[in-house]
Length: 288
Ligand code: G1P
Image: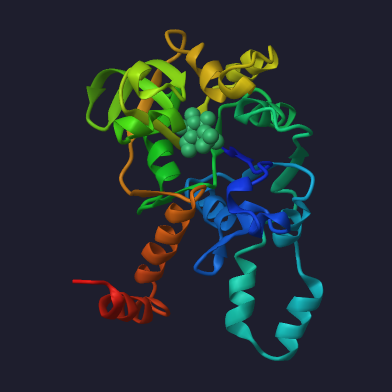
């Protein structure tokens, strides 16, 4: 059973400057909800109750977002704004269910995950990268938790990417495939297309065994001179079961400007409140 998820949210978000000068990228909305809210909701749907946010300087608004907003709540109550109160209640988890640790230097994803080691302890855990927004029902992590119940070990969300894009992803050397699960025979972080073992990429959802923390403790630097989660995971291959899950759903790369705009449109179109207006605008304005 997976009961804890780590959210690496310490990144500087330079691709979204100037917005991210004052707003953490995880707080950028898709329609009206911050990216991080989607990630937390996905974890909750997967049965996870304990969240660990690995934050950094300048990210204090993340903590405020998931806290009780006393004045705002009192004002909405006084004005009888029930709908807004209900929306706000989604941002509150039971006391103590979110823990915050700080990543003091931008030393890579592996380093960020390792910063959560004392809270995670000796249990399997999930990692969610909020930049990767997966639109699907059930959510990607729920699909992974269900698969984990069958195969155990380590599990990563996997998706084919255009071959020329391998340099942006962890890339899998695929082994045998059974249904939607592929054995992971190798992993390499951000290979050039010419060196890539496949175009099967790691998407930002992981279920990992605690042994990965000991490997991360060695602090070995990899691609980009960063401590890479991919490199640490690669060392578990052959020692523990390791699978990639071909999840159902559409993944939006919200770390990318175009991906973020597309996610806004895709989520807006699904919504009863704003969907019709957005659809009408697209229909009227897109060239046939
Ligand atoms: C990270 C991981 C990479 C993975 C990607 C998924 O890279 O290091 O292995 O494929 O997330 O989004 P980043 O996008 O943080 O550079």
